[in-house]
Structure formats: C-alpha cells, structure tokens
Length: 391
Image 1 (tube, rainbow, N blue to C red):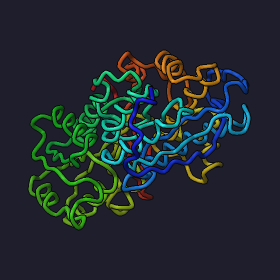
Image 2 (cartoon, helix red, strand yellow):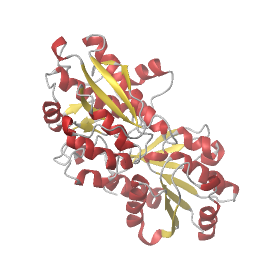
Image 3 (cartoon, rainbow, N blue to C red):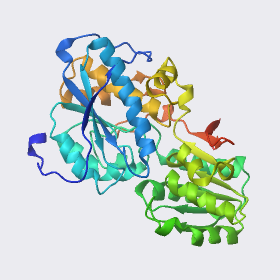
Image 4 (cartoon, helix red, strand yellow):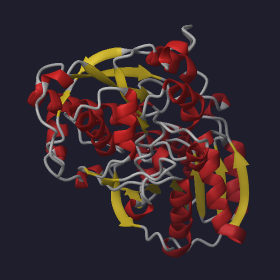
C-alpha cells in the first residue's frame, strides 16, 4: 500500500533510527517471548521534538524509547528500532514528515501523532499506507469520526475532558463568572468549545489568540483587559502551555486574582516557567490521564534512571503504546495488516491503564479517566483529584 504514495519529500523531519528496547516488563501481560524471526522491524514516534510545544512531544518520545530499550534487553540488541519523526507539532509540517515516514517499509506501527492538528493532516497519509497508529495524547473528538481504520487513541477525548473541566470550575472552584479563550488550533478551539457548551450562562466572555509563538510580541493585553473587565473569577484557556503561562503572567501583573484552568496541553512545567511560579501557583490543568508518578511496576524508577528526570505527561501512556506494538510484533504480527488487526482487538493492561479500543479507535469508555492537577509553589502540577465522569 505504501508504494502507491507520493515519493516527494515535504516539510521538516528528524528521522533518527534511535534504538531502544525491551519489553512490557511492567505490564500484567506476558511478553510473547524471544523469537529472533520477529526482529528487525521498527516502530515510529511521530510528534513535536522541536518547537513551542516540544516538551509534551519529548515526554512521549522518551516513554516510548524506554519501552523499546527494555524490549531489546530481553529480545536482543536492535530487535525493534524506534524511528523518530519531528513534526514540530505543526499541521503544516506534518504531511511532509508523514510521507517520509511511510517510505520506510520496516515501520509497522506509529506512536502518535501527538497533537490533534497534526493528526488531522498526517493521519490520512497513514491511513492510505495502512500503518496502525496509537496516539497517546491527541484528544480532538472528530479524529475518530473520519473512518480511519488505522486510528487508535489511548486516552479519553475532549468530549470527556471538556465536561470534566467545566464541572471542576462549577463544582470545585465554585466559579460564577468564567471567561473562555483559545488559540484557534484544532485541539485548543475544540476543547474550548466543549467547555463553553457545558458552562452555559456562566461564560461572561470569549476570545481568540494566535498559536504559541505567533502572538505579536507575546502581547496578550487586549485579552487580559477583557478578562479583568468581565469580572471573571476563573479563566479557561484552550491551547498549550507557553501561551497559557504568558497570559497568566500578564493577568497577574494586571492585578487579576482569579484562577486559570487549562487542558492537558497546559499540563507542563513550561506553564509555570512562562507565568512565573508565584503567578502559576493554585492554577488548575486537566488531563485525560492519571499522574505518571502513579504508574505501576518499575516504570517510575526506570524512567528516572534512564532520563534523569521524572516522567512527564503521557510518558507512561506512550510506554504502554510502544509495548502494545512490540508485543504484537513478538507474537508474529510482522506486517502492517496483521499488526493493525492485533491492535484493534487488544485487551492490554499496562503501567498507566488498561487498553481496549472501540470500532472507531476510541479508548473503551469504561476505561476513561480525567484528572485535575494543581500547580504548587515550585511550579509543579501535582495530582489534585479524579474528576467524576458523571459530573
């Protein structure tokens, strides 16, 4: 199926055939065993390794690379190789990078795309090539409604996260006036739209910003003045951590005393770096995930040993996604068609969650979770509570 795709390169990519390795040793599932006949294949990471949202992409890549390292420790050096493709988190760059990826016929599965916008532009290429994908982090609901057979999402979508964020602002923060803005991205605008629909008449104003790095002079004064003038006691931002942090910094400078709430795209230390730790303290982010520090098995210690830092948002989910692919390969599913069938029917318990997929590639609703995290005085988003799905 790949041979029929255009061979032209487009966009920027970093294709590193960086090795990694080994097994689902943290999972309750058994590895399919050491079989050298099933070695020599690749899985790919597809997401941002550079750019304004690179922190989230690096979290995912490092979780996947740890899994590959551990797999190879058990099954032989370079049994499975991790190929890295840097989309820069851009829907414009992603198609060219995707076309480069599908030329490598050794790649049997893709961890990613990481973001919703790049998923919209890259996933049609992966669908044509027939390469199964598992995104640990792209949450726009419409991604599952395109009829893509290769698409799988390892976390809840924004139809769960958005209502949970709205519920938190209403029921926990007891906010009575809420301002909502977004960065016009597929992810940010989609999440903000769901939040607005659930908040109803609590919304006292809405606005748009440019994407991270594109706001002129990083000046959000127009938005800041609108929020302050609205009397809002809470502000929801649909977008990523850099913009959200800069907005909070400028809100604090303007004397605003409310609480900012963001989605999983804001759940990164980069938010507190951009806002200033004092300005970020007490702010809330939601995530269709639990804390990586709560992952089971030896994952938390293994990640810290390998990378010298704590696991970040979606590192544990990416670790699980990589192991789903590698267990399938170890069991003899060494074509994209066979691996797609394996992934679509999997029932796998990993370090972050159990994974079963619906016919459209969504995570089984019975396995969905949405957590809130609160930034502390050190600029770290600490687990706050598991937000009930019924709220």
